[in-house]
Image 1: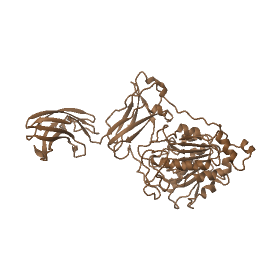
Image 2: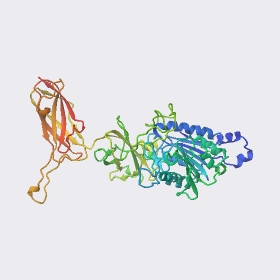
Image 3: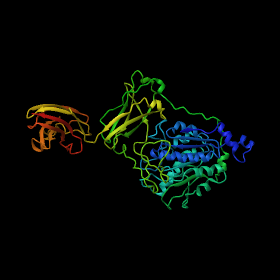
Image 4: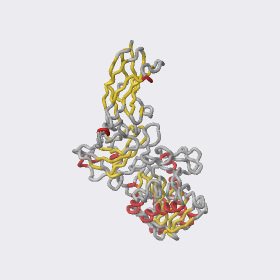
Length: 577
């Protein structure tokens, strides 16, 4: 949802405010309130409801209210709306520092907003950090920023992760406020559990100091800690943890003696009709992307290259510099995608019985709201982190990707971004096809064989089978000759393709030890991605009936791949009399 207040509505609401005079309406600017709801999976509808409650309270005190909700909460829309804002409310994912994900502060993505990469992208988010906020946004002087339900902003981490020390929590609080102070803020409040309507009403009434509003919140713990900000000159940081030195869910960084009257008095006058920003696009260039591909087999945890081809005669239409973001969406019934070190599984916060927040954004309402507010950790695979793309000599672009660490079926979605990380519009993204990928384990084989066959009882017959190594390492090795002497020659080591009969009539294996009836040596040191055709010579069982011929690779190092969990090849054979 992208909704603006102002225009004709501004005049009608201002006239209805008690005590407002014609002179005051003509000379004073109405404080601008911006409410942002970022994509947060199943918690998004609940966050929208909290933002709607705050907006309903705000519109009674100012006519200038702007709502930007997922799936339309893009950086382009948010940046445009925040210019000149006196009060900002944000609900969504938080990404701060210190954290377990980085060894040092990363201003491009930390201490800011988790937003939709482009309009309509409700099932993933992209972080825009303190660097963009401090350099591209100009708030009204002494604006108040309110973070609700965030990880990291109030000194916490994520549900399921250790919160760390008090010193680390103080760093998170100070860091998360820094970019917003550079944008003009006078106070940054972070409250992990309290609905934002309380703070919004208290600030817009203009009767109390910001410090008093925060200290007297309904969820106060009376464990107040105070320390000077190291990131923002002359600012004071305060925390009110659940316990004396743990449970970091309430914080504020502010200018000393800042009052809500100052915030309202510093409101800036903006255009009566807000300008709706236009997202950048490539859709009008006539570009067509071909089918994406991966340059190496997608084995778990591997690094490979995703190519996005463009016809060579159209490649010149692409901008000189592009970035590409990727995400892996799990399609089968397994766990979420987890490239690299995955984020923890979401858990209910503060004793919420049965509340769940996993999954994609289900809509605009929350029919089964949790009984208590949630702080939602992100799922691995949700975050779009664009990186510079490489131009291909024959047309198109390519980018390195890390394959998820769990085998399964995935959809690999690529998004195209400008050099500053801002995504092109939905029409541009629709030009890039998704790629369905079967992620295989570290040791994997595939068998190209007919699904059925017919043979005469006791008669020799042949089957053409293609075996492919889709694992990380070679099967066996070639002959190795060392320079010391002939005695140092190491013979080749080869994997073997074996077949076993299974009698579907219930008689079990019919021929040979443990049912092994045929085998064929594979080339020495068959490399990952290597494939070999095998002309398999077999003898059909003596008794007519229905059988399964089960194919397996026995590797010198791993042993039976089927025993290691790799699905075998299976051919149903009808044996005639």
